[in-house]
Image (cartoon, rainbow, N blue to C red; front, side, top):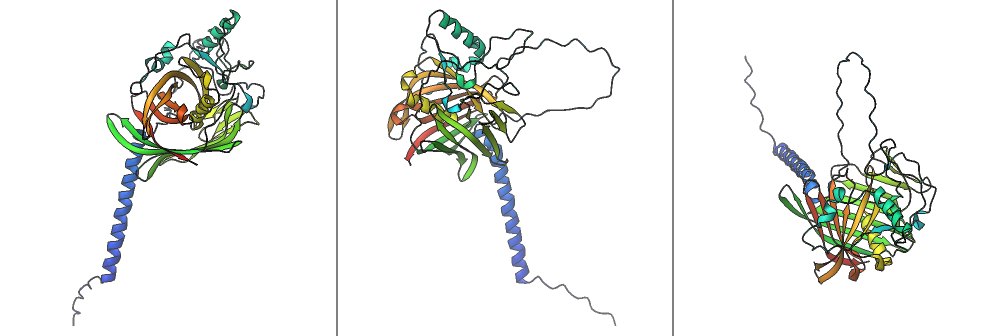
Length: 396
């Protein structure tokens, strides 16, 4: 006698509940992944772009009959000295290396806070290269003119190279100091309102800088985020010398990427990077991507009489994969609106090297607020920008 078919048993309430929980968890994971991917795409909008990412394409082709190679072309002089694999200068204590500058012949008109200055934006084309500036300064001293040398923090420059001699950093005597002392601002945690604009799109976020000096050493932590997501965080630690900040380690973490470290080996007179095999010789005065703001504040606070409209000097800043020579222009004073009222602040325009994706930084330092940075603007070569406006000073 045939066995009657057995009807399937309906799923138990426990199984249905487990399936619903599993489906809910899967949807939550997918939503989180989508949010993280969206935030990664928005990172370029709210945080300064990392311009060290480059792609090298390699293609294999069939071998062609060998022909006599063309004569090698003469090397062209670099617009800036080579910072990698060059002969280091004799060992100099970084905390005692003088910082110097080339003042402009005439003071510039102060720029307003809402419009970027015109001259620094075209510094690559209008301003003389560092080698020519150093030669002009030497000629001025020979004529009895009290000109300073190009910033010693970036290394002394050789004479302009000819077509047969490639440009390189050569060991020379330190330039005459411009800033004779530095006084880092007191400990504080600064809160910022952050606005990023990219391709016409606008996004608002928040930022913070936690500056902790103790007289001999310092720590600095910087964050930029949206809602409860941290898009960019960095930290720096090191010593405080007679002429300012002497970094030892800089760490940077961007959302969706691994942390990178930049090491300042003072004993080996070398800077190394975890994200690349490049090395940079230490010549004294080098800063990282976090401390350059506070080093400028320390110089202004320690030697305020040297700050004047028209002053130009240089600084070497190490990022995550390489170092770059930045030229700094002191434009004048602007009035910046803060929550507790307007404040007068020095406006400095910072021009990275010609190979950098970054076009310009503008920094406002307020002497009435212990030279704290009250505003910071970053602009890249595509016209995208990030503005940070101070909203609160927390005294530690």
